[in-house]
Length: 432
Ligand SMILES: Cc1cc2nc3c(=O)[nH]c(=O)nc-3n(C[C@H](O)[C@H](O)[C@H](O)COP(=O)(O)OP(=O)(O)OC[C@H]3O[C@@H](n4cnc5c(N)ncnc54)[C@H](O)[C@@H]3O)c2cc1C
Image (cartoon, rainbow, N blue to C red; front, side, top):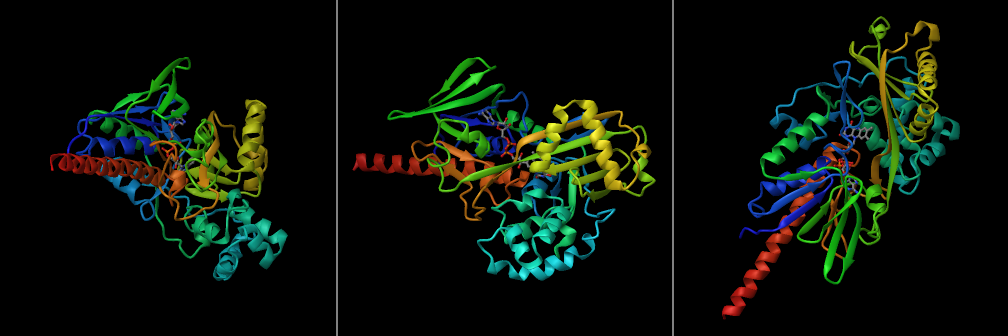
C-alpha cells in the first residue's frame, strides 16, 4: 500500500481517541500522516479519571474491569505492565430480605424474557410479580437504570450478569473483576505517552464548537483556551466523544449520522477517608452493601476508604445534596450510612477527607440497545467519522471505548486503501 502524506485530526482524548490515534500511527498507510488529537480538557482520559487522595488512587469515573468480559482492556493492562488488584465487590453484606430469594426468582423469570420483546424490564417483572414487588426487586439490585423504559428484560438480565455487585443474582456469577492500583487514568496516560512516542501531537484546551459543511468540503471550528478560534479544513476528521457531546454541535446528530437515537444517565461517586478503618470490626472490609436508601451501593475498600456509587435519579439527588453545602452533604452521608448499616449515627466517625464527582452523562447508549449498531458512524453529508463506546456492544465500559477507537481507525484505513486502489486504477487506465 502506498504511503500517504496528509493530516488526520481526532477530536477527543478519551480512551477511544487515544486508541484511534495509536492504531493509525502504527499503521503503514499513515506512516507519513500527521496525526493530531484535540481535547477540550487539560488532561487525557475523559470519563476515566483517577485522583490521588490520602496517598490512595480513587477512580472518580471508570473503576473496574473483568478479565473474562473485557479482553481488550485486559490485553492493554497486561502489555503495558500496569499493576492491578482484585476488585472484590462481588459479595454482599447486610442483605435485604429480598436478596435471599432474588436469585431463584430471577432464574424462574429468565426463560420468559422471549415472550416480552417489547416490554421494559419493570413491566415484565410487574406482569409476573406485581408492581410493588417489581419495584422492590429493582431496588434490591442497586442499579436504578434497570427501571428505564428502554431496558428490555433481555438487556436487564445481561446487565445483572455483567456487573460485579449483582452478578451473584445470576447463574453467571463466575466473572473475576479487577481495578488498576493507580486507577484507570494509568491506562490512558500510558497510552498517551505511547502515542506521543509514535509522533502523535496533542492539543489540550481545544473545544470543537461547530462543524461547517458546504460543497467544498467541511471545516471544524475549535475554540482554543476558551477564546481563540482554530479552523481545521484539511485532511481526515474523526470525532471520538459520546452522543450527548455530538448533540451539542450543529451537525444534525443523530439523524444525519445514524438511524438510531441515544440516551444517557447520570452517575455519582462519593469517597470518604477516615482516621481508622472502623468498618473492619463490622466485618465489612472488601464487601459491598446494597442499600434501601439513596446511597444504593456502599463499598468498603480494604482498610483504605469507603465509597458509594449511584445512578439515575439518585445520582442527581447527590448532586443536589452537594449543592446545599459540604456540611449538609456530609451529614446526609452519615445519616444514610447509619441507616444502611442499621446502627446509630453517633457510632459512625466523621471522615477527615472526602471527594466526589457527579457525571451528568455518565453512561451513554443507543436507546434501541441494538447489538447490530455500527461501531462507527460516518456523517451522511461529509466524510467525518464518529466513534464512541455508546455505539458498541460494550457501551458504558472502557472495553467499548477501545473497540470504538480501533473501529474508527479501521474505517479510515479501509477508506484510504480503497481510494488508493481507485487512484491506481485511474492511472493504469490513463496509460492504456
Ligand atoms: C462514574 C463512571 C463509572 C464508570 N465505571 C466504569 C467501570 O467500572 N469500568 C469501565 O470499563 N468503564 C466504566 N465507565 C465508562 C467509561 O468511563 C467509558 O466507557 C469510557 O471512558 C468511554 O471512553 P470514550 O473515549 O469513548 O469517551 P470519554 O471518556 O467520554 O472521552 C471523550 C473525550 O472527548 C472530549 N470531548 C468531548 N466533547 C468535546 C469537544 N466538543 N471538543 C473537544 N473534546 C471534546 C472529552 O473531554 C473527553 O476527554 C464509567 C464511567 C463513569 C462516568
